[in-house]
Image (cartoon, rainbow, N blue to C red; front, side, top):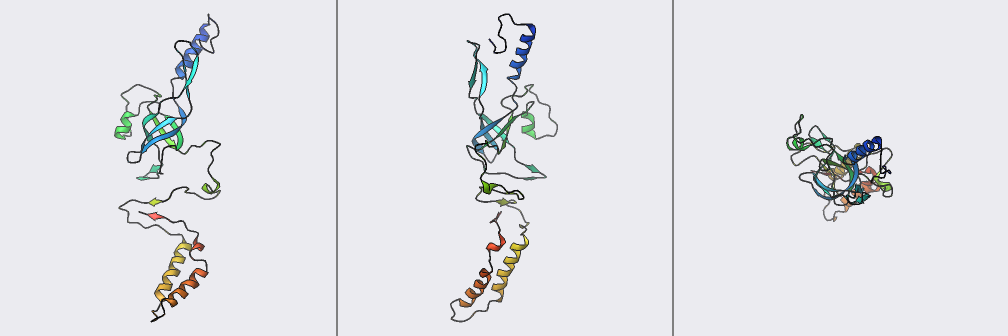
Length: 226
């Protein structure tokens, strides 16, 4: 018997309210999830909902909690537009937010068409989920060096790849970085070989350059341009 229907002779209002609650129990909207596995080539993941579900025991009528099964082939949502995209390395254990579509997304996922008419009539189905990475619990905040009040921070990655394998444009350098590289180039361009000095003249010139704070004066982050 329902927690809400306490009488053996419930009113019509109670029955209708319980029917609505039972129907809503089958409507999936959004929950935090954790990555079980991820295929970067397809951007599909297996994701385990973190919050337990509730269902009614068919024998006792009691509500019980249970761990829902992991969801396979979940599309991971990465920011992107105009042919470009921003992706992150994702590994098992990463958390984020699961969101369920109102209707079947099978046709759209197959074709990517701007106008789709789902063949299946299912709504808010458990299998029609997408995953947005990045959710964190209150007891697991980002460390202090992972955020800045007035700057965009890329934290935790060993490499940052810009562009693609066929890119022809170069990475634009901040003026301080370019100026310090120009200063280094000037040292080499002005260097005159001194016989038998063992590179002493070049070493002295580079010493003058580094004494001015080069290259740490730039405060630059190493960037790997592809």
